[in-house]
Image 1 (spheres, rainbow, N blue to C red):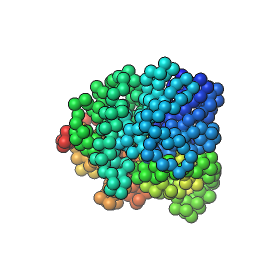
Image 2: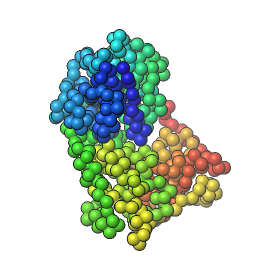
Image 3: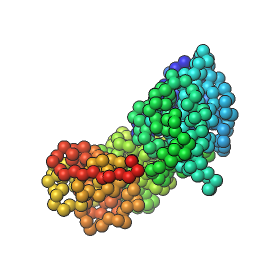
Image 4: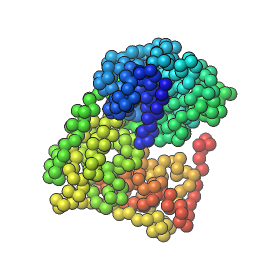
Length: 468
């Protein structure tokens, strides 16, 4: 038996490739099927099953394309009703793979079809459990994504999750390895650890949601308190995962259209496409196409695209470093943004060489910002409130990047704003969006709060209610 966790950091997502005696199962694969096909070939195994723990909201799973290319059977737990061929397993059902066996554990709560898969080894002993979004390391799945026309409330789902954890997961041996679908950085939970697996016994001791003396009422209150609104693209990703989607090869073919500067400009004007610049933030600030927005490929790219581009069907034109265009289109497709319609051939350098109009965003170092901070400047701290509250610059306004589309009407297009985040990535995204909406007086603070706090700048904290 061989177990491989395939972790994708930018999505904080864990897929699994498990093989035994010539057969393999892939659990919660990403959209591109080829890496799993290549792995099966390298290991000389046949992919027999594709296990889905639930209909994912934060990414488009690769189950549909992978099944078409390999003939593997897609498996969901009870209550799933996809519109493509799949095996809907029953609670407690045993599924054999080579010399090992999986037991299906229906664990509703995060969603009503949520299911864990318990792996029994060659001696029929519990080895590991693949928990999807039911149980994370340090947290459990948010219970607000599967409400149905008033039939189920967030509190109802939290109650289901309490019962699932207590009745199906917590009675299992402490020695069991827990392999979840996500880690820190995912929007599917509140307090996930940066660790990507752990022993169940450790989670019983350290995970707030698994406290032995916790009542259902306490669980529901703690789980539902302070849940941020889900990103707008979540619902559309669930639909794609439930009903199927366009083949990734078709999406790539449509997106990988090389455009000259003139063609790029004409297509942008004709289609109303967003121009998405994915280069390094420092390079973007020095020069970019007017009205483009910045979301760097080397940061939390896909989740920020999903959070900030509210229409998943929005046409997108890409500006990327040479050689990374395919990566950008592919990573957009991972979260359901399939309408990329071309890229700037040769990158931004060709735009400059063509003599096209260019805009810039001024950046200053933390030391210069510290000298200006007590002169009455307006400071926008675009970190999350949980980062801002413990410590921030005196007088800074907390305007989290996540909420920019709702906050913009509160800002003055004629005012000068000094913008910072934790390290400089989010602040450039924020500044680029404001710039594209007609805000002209923006100064980005490079290095963000990590460097600001190394100066002698005056700091303060914000008292938090409810112990948060």
